[in-house]
Amino acid sequence: MSASATALAEAPATEGSLKVIQDATCTFCGCVCDDIDLTVKDNHIIEAKRACVLGKAWFLNHKTEDRPSCLIDGQPASLEAGYDRAARILVEGKYPIIYGLSDSPCEAQRVAVSIADWINGTIDTTTSVCHGPSGMAFQGVGEVTCSLGEVINRGDMIMFWGSNPAESHPRHFTKYSLMPKGMFLPNGRKDRTCVIVDVRKTKSAKAADIFVQIKPRADFEGLWALRALSKGIDLDPVQVKRDTGVELAVWQDLMHRMKACKFGVIFFGMGLTMTRGKHANSEALLALTRDMNAYTRFVAKPNRGHGNVTGADNVVAWRTGYPFGVNHSRGYPRFNPGEYTTSDTLANGEADSGMTIACDPMANFSEPARRHLASIPYIALDTKETPTTRAAAVAFTVATYGIHTGGTVYRMDDVPIPLRPSCESPNPSDLEVLTQIERRVKALIGITG
Image (tube, rainbow, N blue to C red):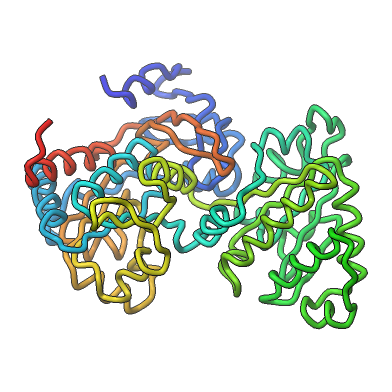
């Protein structure tokens, strides 16, 4: 019996065809909430207790598409034929790429990295187009970090910089950062100060005790102003106002509060990482966090998007030493964002074959990248039909992780969470597909065992 079938068999039935899966894990966003109770009827989820609005949509609107598990050149084909064709495409390419992984369990991600190694290819995750600059900054500055459990129990000053969790991570406030009553914060929200720094008043700003509306593309200047103030350096009020759009007195008051707190946390999002400055912005924020530890305990965490994008970074880093954009063409891993990241290898016309896993570059990459991807043979794995699967030489329809299949995912704070499947799927898991492709790749290149 498979792991998913075993988990389903262990699910207690309530009455008739109803069953309840307790403490299921939602893989929609990086919060990876693992306290969801799912009610299943006739292999369809009809209730998702405690899930947020995004989680409910993820569970309740999910359906298995009525399409073949494998398409070759747009025509239905057997899985075996698909595995064979996919392996040949990857082995015969001179510059093969593998991209995606952020909506797959860690077990499947491990196999994808192995395939990239066997074919001397380049492997990249969706991190390269979201928190890739943060990954670069971690290597240059380091990261003072903690788990979300520590935030719940200790965080008395919660800052969000370039992040809008009210819309992107609806349970962040209530489950992890602002509302929970912690071991050292028995009054919950009353014991915390919330600061939000952003270029506009988002829905999250309504929850803030202090809202700092910074000038667009001035995050670097604002962070360095805070760094200077933390060191007691005098700043010119006129220049600070001109550079950041915020009065010096506001920054001074914020720094006073930061030094006075017991446990400060800065959550940062793509409003920081993907605006002007990119990795320099992330480095400035991480350096500010490090500086603050001369006065009090301060940590920083990126607010990650996809359900297992953190797991993808971890798995690729375990196997290669680097978090994303890793090239194996010389027989060993090399890391160089801008050269080995997928959006660039495609836009520059370098890749000649590839595989996309649980992602849709045809819908969100630049026009040159999309045009080149359409011109090369590639394999696509996804749970549904997308522009990327429609243009693929081989397209596999796979089961949905967390709903149909088990495995492991990583929460945004690098804590591994097990998945508890609730429904069955006629389609194979991405782990099964990748394992079969790897087996054939090894056979084609003469690797036995």
